[in-house]
Amino acid sequence: MSDRYAMLTIKKPTGEEAEALVPALADVLIDCVEGGASVSFMLPLSRDTALNFWRGVARGVAQGERILLVAQDNEGRIVGTVQIVTAQPENQPHRADIAKMLVSRHARRQGVAQRLMAAADEAAREAGKTVLVLDTVTGGDAERLYQRAGWQRVGSVPKYALMPDGAFCATTFYYKHLA
Image (cartoon, rainbow, N blue to C red; front, side, top):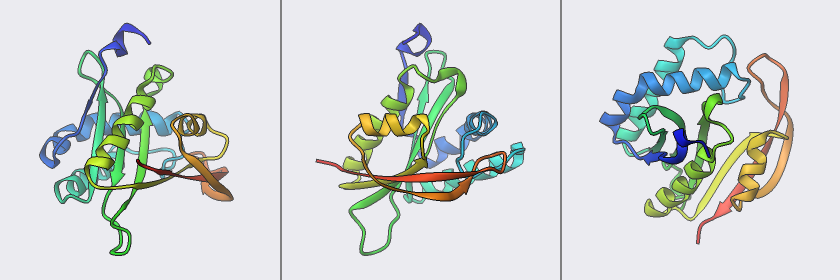
C-alpha cells in the first residue's frame, strides 16, 4: 500500500454531508466509467448526469434509504465509495443491496475496495441487515475481491448489461450472510 493510502479513512456521511460531497463523488464516477466500469452509465458520461445521480444518492441517505461510505486518502480526497441500499420490500427487512462499488483508477490495487467492503459489512450489521446481495461484471477484477471477502457466487446472466462503450457483458450475482 502506498503512503498516500496508508492513512485511508472510511466515512459514513449524513445526507447533508453527502450533498456536500456530490462534486467529488461525481469525479470518481466519471473516472470509473471512463475507465470502462459497467456501473449503469454509458459513455460519454456528462458531469450533469453524474451530479444528478449523486444528488439522488444524497437524498436517499437523508431519507434513510441507503448508507453511503466514502474512502478518503491522506490528503482528504475521495478515492472510492460504496452504497448499501437498505430500503427493501416489507418481506425483506433483513436484506440490503451493495451498489456502486467505485474506486478511482489511480487508487486501485491499494486495498481501498477491500476496506470499503469491510466497512460495508459493518455498516450493514449496524443497520440490522443479515443478508447482502450484489452483482458485478462477470470475469472482472471485482469478482476476485468479493470471493476473497466471503461472498458466495449464485450464477451469471449473459448479456445482462452493457459496458460503457455499448458492448454486452454478463453479470454475476453474489450473496453474503452476515454473522
